Length: 115
Image 1 (cartoon, rainbow, N blue to C red):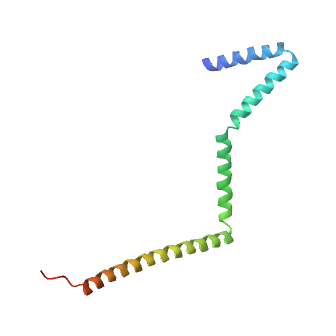
Image 2: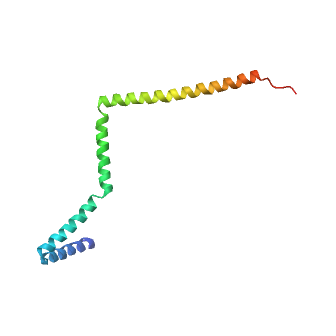
Image 3: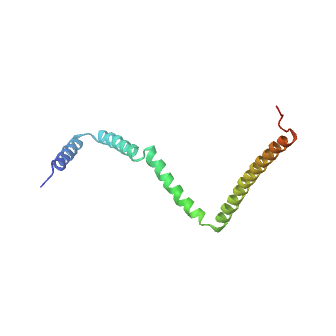
């Protein structure tokens, strides 16, 4: 059984073909240019291009990361970042300890006043 949409498309194509046959050659070329331009604009929408670039980028990154030299660089950068993080954490603990000791020392030097 033929679907209504299929039948309608077939009729439209047949009518369009007959119409194009009756047009002068210059008009056919102009219609073809407009149609091709519209089709390319639809196909190459910015989102499609951006998506294609992202997919290529991910593929290239996956290949790049497989390189042992790159893996070593990543490992060294991770160590450097972690060293800086640990230095900051240690400095914070030292400062907190110093503040605590100063506070306790002040209490020792300044005994509470009797009433």
